[in-house]
Amino acid sequence: MKVLVVGGGGREHAIIKKLKESREISQLYCAPGNGGIAADATCVPIKSTEVEKLAAWAAENQMDYVVVAQDDPLCMGLVDLLRQEGIPAFGPDRLAARIEGSKVFAKNLMKKYGIPTAAYQTFEELDKALAYVKTAKCPVVVKADGLALGKGVLICMTNAEAEAAVTDMMAGGRFGLSGSRVVVEEFLEGPEVSVLAFTDGTTLRPMVSSMDHKRALDGDEGLNTGGMGVIAPNPYYTPEVAERCMREIFLPTLQAMRAEGCPFHGCLYFGLMITADGPKVIEYNCRFGDPEAQAVLPLLQSDLFSIMRATTSETLDQVEVAFSSGASCCVILASGGYPQKYETGKVISGLDEAAQTACVYHAGTRRSENGDIVTAGGRVLAVTAVAGSLPQAIEASYAAAGKISFDQLHRRSDIGARAMKAYQA
Image (cartoon, rainbow, N blue to C red; front, side):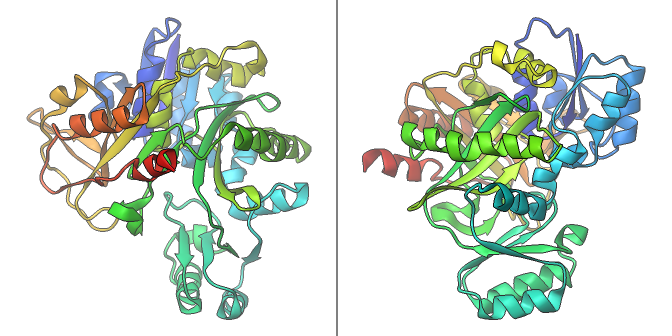
């Protein structure tokens, strides 16, 4: 079968490497891909947001299946366009993708159906938002309603910070139209857990839990990023917590989406906080997390392509979804200055050496005219190691990452440290 994966980052590279294991796939394509993905799939020079062009290309080139991996094309309705062309796809349609594309939609959904989440208020007018945050109990969390590359969430420790955040989003245009509406919600405390789940709208199969590290610097300091590293499984996600999440959050979310007339197919991401009152939803994503996918997919033992097709055909209850009992650690190698200003075009060395002992996923790379792999983004590479235990996975990931170098390389040195403290407690 001929399969197209839409996207061009580390998440897509992880998906492609896992799909390559399927005997059913004869040809793999990726649009637009990147310098590393080109070694594993044929890259197609169409941006992931050019949804009409992508649907037309898929039809013209007789794709048998399309994996829509990024949030933007999902929210723009690429799955809907592919369906019109008669091409099955992995991922939710436009209406179901609102669960990530609009935080207002997601929060209202949880409120309506009694799914535990933080208390909140939504605002479309700046003056009303400012009046609220001036007297709100701090810290508070200010969120842009729409997509913002994972950076549209600000934790404000003071009322002044909250006022600045609201003004920056709604009047300053920091996130464009995505920030024209905002959600202001209570600050929750507790361990964070990411759980990705395959679903066909009725059946749900959770993947191995994981722990993301969003801050740019060691000790969870610095600015929020798209993610600087992940470990899996997450020690805070105990069997008792997992059972409660299934009963109170996962299945009710699926039921709510069906009740709203927009059943969810694909990968549903649950961003959770394990509070003193139990697990609560911080956010939903309508696709694999990045870099969570780079840590979770290497642990998948079942055939990814069979699972994906089952989410589309609503036969997930008939397919095996099994994961290794081991652990993984993913360390992100970023450009110095990320998530703010950074330089690109830096030659990368040591890739082959690192790949001997770890999975090296390309996120922001390209191949230069002279054949070198060079940096082309903020998050450049994701280095993932799998081992029998978390300490072994962390050690192996950092050992492999240490073989890679490029000018102004930045990485955190403490990925997995919080998880290790939990194991030792």
